[in-house]
Image 1: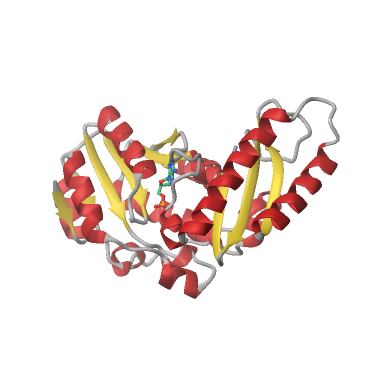
Image 2 (image 1 turned 180 degrees about the vertical axis):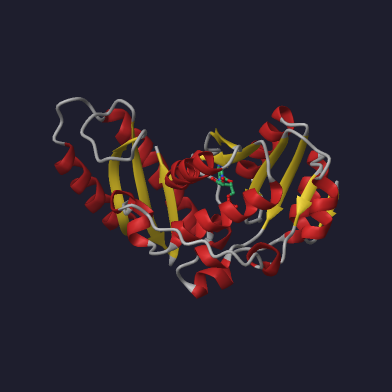
Length: 270
Ligand code: AMP
C-alpha cells in the first residue's frame, strides 16, 4: 500500500492507471467503509481510499472539531485489506485550485438533511467535485447509509464527469444499528438506545400496509420514540427512493430518520 500525502504523490502514482476505484471517506473506518473498499478491490484495477475530514461540509465548527479521527488504526485496516493507495490530502491539496465552485441546491432538494444542515450538501458536492477532478476515477463507491448524499452526488458527478457512482448497501452491527464513525461518540447506554431505535423502525416499516393513515402513524411513531428514548428528532418521513419525494406508497419507499442522542446526530434509512 502506498501512502499519498499530497497531490504531487498522487499524480505520480496514478498517471499511468486505468479503471481506478475510489472510496472517499472521512476516516475512523468501520465495516461499512470496508464493504465499499472490498467492492472496489473486486471491480477495479487499482483502489484508492481517501481520508479527509472535509471542513466545508460541517455546518457546525464544534461538530467538525469533535469528529472522530483515528488515522493509525485506519492505516492498519487499509494495509490489511491490501488497498493500493491511501490518499491523505491536506486542506490546501483539495482547496488550492483557484477556480471557485459555487453549488446551489434546487428548492426541491432542500429536504431531509439539506433542510436541517444548511450548507452541508453544498460542501459535500464541492469536495466530491474537487476529489473527482484530482483522482479521475472510473468508479466511486458510496454507501446507501447516506442515501440523500448518494443521490445528490450521483446526479452532480455523473452529469459532469465520466466517473460512475456505485451504490453499496448499508452495513449494520448485530443489533441492527447502522455502522457510523459517529457511533464512536456515543456511550454504551446511547448505543443501546440507538440500536433499539433502528430495530423499532425496521419493524415499523414491515408493518406498514397500503391504505393506512401514514401521516398519523408517523406522528405517533415520532412521539413514541421521543418519549421512550429521550431523543430530538429532526425528521421521520417516508419518501420515494427515486426522487426523495414524500409518498404514501410503501413500494419503492424508505423511512428516513435523523435524530440527536447525547448531542450526537445520527441518520439512517430503512
Ligand atoms: P464517511 O466516512 O462517513 O464520510 O463515509 C464514507 C462512505 O462510507 C460514504 O459513502 C458512506 O455512505 C459510507 N458508509 C458509511 N457508513 C456506512 C455503512 N454503515 N454501510 C455502508 N456504507 C457506509
